[in-house]
Image (tube, rainbow, N blue to C red; front, top):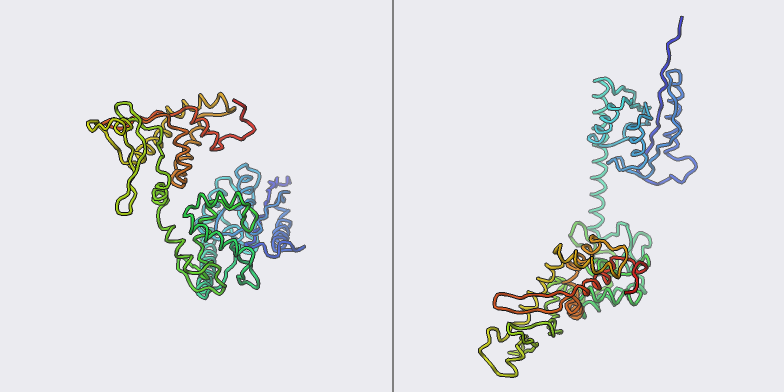
Length: 438
């Protein structure tokens, strides 16, 4: 009698462990899972089961989602029709989420792949097997959620007691016996940063100075403006532990006294635009040499003080020389015209016409420059503008603007194309080595 042909089934063993604890041991949890699964596959050799050579092991990955490298490789091999059977030790090794598991089973069914749990015997091709699977997955998901709630409750209770709950120790502290202790050398740096910000009121200027001075974070990287804002807003420095936005008295020693903290945060509560406008009075000639009236006469900056307040204007030089009062525009408030010019310049820098014109000129001195490079560079300036100091804003305006003509119906701005090219280069759109001498 002729023996029936037994179809060969390619079996892939998938293993997972939620934490990295113990993975460096000679025989760990992943090895134990794999050993049990391989033994089961060997027991089914008479049914044509063969173990595929690839290993699918995810060590240190949670089962709460599908973002796991080995699982992604397994699913790719399933879609490529290189696997017929997926073998796991328990179903929660594959997933602890009912919704995620439904997605996996859908892929299994589409590719005629069978799913087998070594310790939980059921068949996913039958309705009873699917019911059993859903019940087991529901309990697995419930267990995961309960564990998560316990961890979150414990974490919140510990934070309310002011305990340090792990992670990177902030600059100025070290961790000893699971507690924050002050590191004197770094704490002096933190106090220096708070004091200098309270004096200057600008994170941009301070960040540049700190980078120039070689001040770094705990990992040896320069402190940029983003790091600076995080440091200035970290309530650890006033001896507090924060959980979900609520501060609690911490177990650790404070580095910054409350008076300095309040002074710094009084400054931070003002918007960058307002801080820049306040400091702009220190540089009252943003449009000096660029502004012209309807009659073509230059307009020069001037100012007056009333009751301790500074009022700035641009006045026609012809009026000053000839003492004529019948001009259509005698003087203009400096803050208004400067804001209007700056707003128009920022709008122009986003216009396709300016981008195309700038890229054409810039390509003459900068190699491998595209219109996208120019657009990205000019867009990069817009969010940075309000953080710049008045002197830097004045430099950029002088670089970009050739002339501003004031009329009764508004202002006409003429830009410097070469100035735009220099600005693109300053914003580091291209690497220095690809620039060539003009």
